[in-house]
Amino acid sequence: MNKYNFFILIILTTFLMGSSFAVGKIGLNYSSPLLLAGLRFLLAGIIMTVIVKLLKRKQPSGLKNWGRVAIIGTLQTAGVMGCIFISLRTIPASESSILTFMNPLLVIIFGTLFLGIKYKWYQWSGVALGFLGVGITLGGINDFKIGIVFGAFSAVFWAVSTLLVNKWGMNFDTWSLSAYQMLFGGTLLLLLSLVLENSYFIVNINSIFILLWLSIMSSIVQFAVWYFLLQNGEPGKTSSYLFLAPLFGVLTGSILLDEPISYSLIAGGVFILTGIYLVNCSFKTFVEKP
Image 1 (cartoon, rainbow, N blue to C red):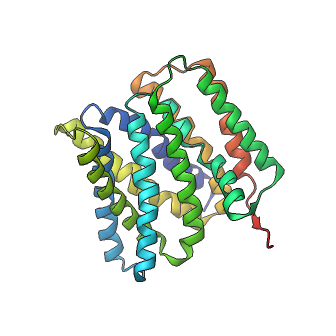
Image 2 (cartoon, rainbow, N blue to C red):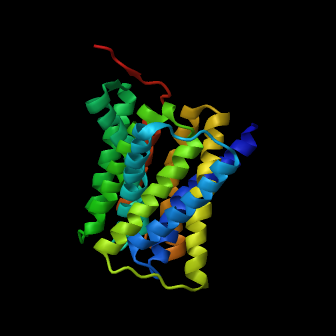
């Protein structure tokens, strides 16, 4: 793949990642948060499942692996996306995106504590810079809101699911795993919506467009492009561009929602983006054997 096509696809997938926060916040004008998240991933999961069946991709085998799919769906889709959509009720899309994309920093910490993975000194420097950036960002917020907690938990769930996918991923076809975990997570979100919130969805042209955009563009297309890049390029180098996603989250929040960009948000964002880059700029980690 030539550099021009690679760059275009990187911009597309990270833009879809980052802009989904602003689009999702707009969607909350028409729907309760858990219901919107559930509908998004149930629809995306159904479409992906049909694609997987048509392409005759390898299916998960055995009850144990189906249980792992359910765990990943609970964490990656229900946990991450549920927390994101709830956070958007009370905090700007820019803040939610920055908090959520702390996950590469948490992967370093959790990977060290629970899996014994060893990382380079500059990756740990990235973690320190990232959390310094979070502190600067939150320091500029005069009114603490519960959405900050949910935004942080979305990063925690994402980091844990990343490590589990890394550990279990060899047992699954990537496309099948994505389809079924979205299907399971979306169904779980709908059940949680019925129990935990006053569910509603206002049906009109705007709400349907937002739902389709989130399900198709920000889920299926984003996934397809991202994994195409990972399979056709250097995975570590490709992953290092994830720092663009929160940048797009801040920019689209400002453009679509007229959210102010404070100096503390800019300064904190710079530290966080630098930290994420340092975390991803080394492409090899190893587990030290006892």
